[in-house]
Structure formats: C-alpha cells, structure tokens
Length: 163
Image (tube, rainbow, N blue to C red; front, side, top):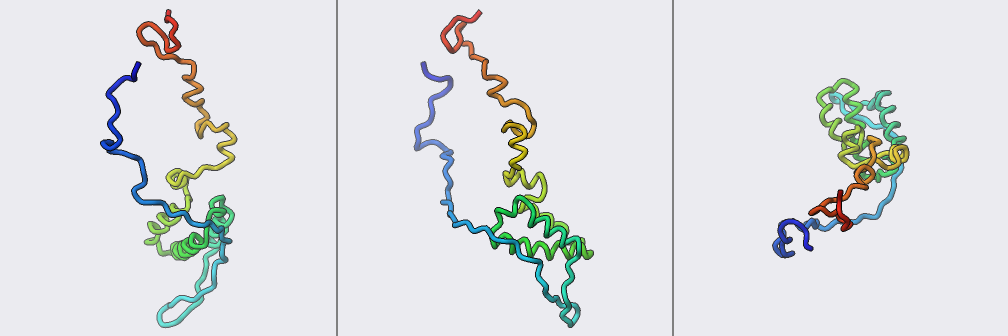
C-alpha cells in the first residue's frame, strides 16, 4: 500500500534540489601560530609616537591565544584578529565609537555563546558530559517515543489487532 498524500513531483519539476548553486572551494589547511602584539608607531599630530597596548588588550590577546578556537586559526585569521586587537586597544583607550565594530569582529571568531551557536561551535566536554543528548540533558525523541506504534484501521503497523 502506498503512502499517504500526493505523489512526489517528477525530478525535473521540483523547486528545491538542495544543491549548492556555487561550487565549494577546498583549501589546504595550515594552522598558524599566534603572532605577538607588535611594536609600531602611530601619527599623533605631526609626530610618530610609539603605540601603547593597554594591559586589558594584552590580556584579551592572550585569551584568544589560549582559546579552543585558536587551533583552527590560519595566518589570515590571526592577521584579522591582530587588526581587531588595535580596535580593542583603541576602545579601551577611550574611543567608545569602536564598540560596534569590535563586537562584530569578535563574533566572527565565536567570542560569545550566541556567536558560537551561529558558527555551529560546541565544546567537546559538554557533549561527553550529557552523553550526546544535547545541552538540555533531555532524552532524545527516539528514546521518548521509540516504543510507540501507529494504529491504522484497528491494526498496529506490525499487523496485529489493537485492543
């Protein structure tokens, strides 16, 4: 006996084919080591002065080096994060207008729970602690409803009569 509902559309008439319209580019992965915060000069008035890294930015930079995400950073990622460190430093030196740009940039690296969720990042220990059931610890649908059987016309899907 066939399934319930209308027959599926022929392959040529389906609206969704779930194929990527643009082919994926596969890159050779090379993990890169984190660079040190560099010494450099900036223009102040008509002079070049040494740029000062606030202690808060040095601590922030070390947190990124020690983060679980860092093992997945390539050289271009570290370069982007280094530019972000300059924004972080300027923010902590009082330029609060940079807060929005800083927030957007660190979100690209999974700095917050919501950005990690958007990037589909999970912590391995969390998965081990809940036996793979997800963060809530609730049993899966298969565990909850695995013993239920559909009843059709007075018979279960195994073909035996129902009470």
